[in-house]
Length: 159
Image (cartoon, rainbow, N blue to C red; front, side):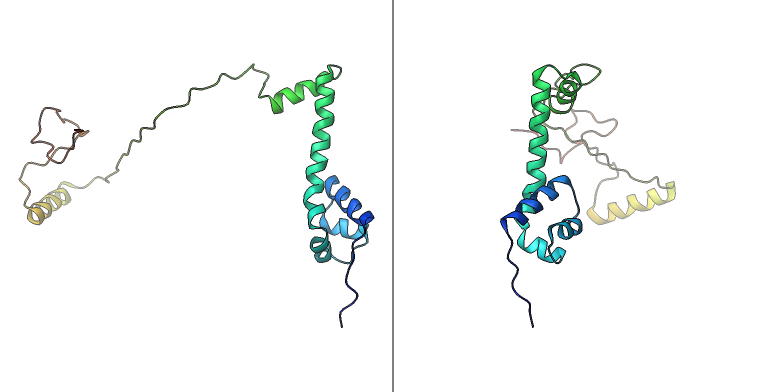
């Protein structure tokens, strides 16, 4: 038989949110807040567990910003500039120009073959697609000449 349904009080909600903001584990929060289990805590205090750390971080950042912008706390000012404004000990980092296009280079690695294996491969290719004895040179191959159209018959040129 199930026990009475849990009902969260406003005081428990505030306590859970504060404890979550302090960084306690869910097990520790359940114990301190007087909730029976972590499962019950997560079920009934989901929003407080989510918002507690966010609000705590916001409060600390607000306090740091106040100290940094007041000019009275140079350590807070330097910390803020380094972590939030991108400053460093070496000086301001120069912005890099964003490339407008990307050029991809693809390098195909072909493991070295023995002369006997290479001869076998060339014979197999000649028999397969009736290619001439002279190998076709592709654009980008060593020894490729832009003017030799017959050397690169499959190369496409922009219209």
